[in-house]
Length: 84
Image (tube, rainbow, N blue to C red; front, side, top):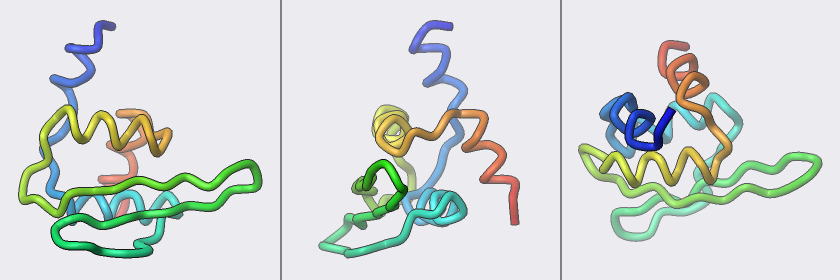
């Protein structure tokens, strides 16, 4: 699969919705500055930190970058999004 195919299949999400989804994976909001939230997750091996813009609609490239940083696949994102 080409990178463009992957990007085209990503859902359209707001920053707030993405924070809710990533919280289901163990991420916590550790700070908000202006229109950006900082999330953190500690594991036995590492600490993962990412910044999420609190926009109504995240750019596909921005979402893709956040997914890479948080080690979240498109499939996992979809499963977490459906989880209530």
